[in-house]
Amino acid sequence: MANIKSAIKRVEINQKKRTHNIKFKSDMRTQIKRLEKMIDQNDAEGANAALPATFKKIDKAVQKGGIHKNTGNREKSRLAQKINELQSA
Image (cartoon, rainbow, N blue to C red; front, side):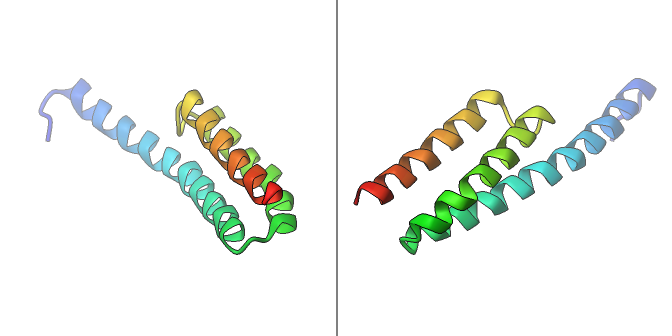
C-alpha cells in the first residue's frame, strides 16, 4: 500500500473506476454470450432480434469508458459477421 497521501487517493479512485467499469463490461459480456448461444443454436430470428440490444450494451460500455472504442467496434463487426454467415447458410 502506498504511503504518500496522493498515491493513496489514486489507489482509491482507481478502485472506484474499476468497479464502475466492471458493471458495464459484465453486462456487455453477458449479452454477447446470449447472442452467441443463439448463433450456435442456428436461431437466426432470435439472433437478429437480440443484435440491437447487444450493440446497445457494447456502445454503452464504450461510452462509459469500460472498453476502448475500437474494441467495441471490433466486437460488433464480428457479431454482425457471424449473423450474416448464419443467414446465408
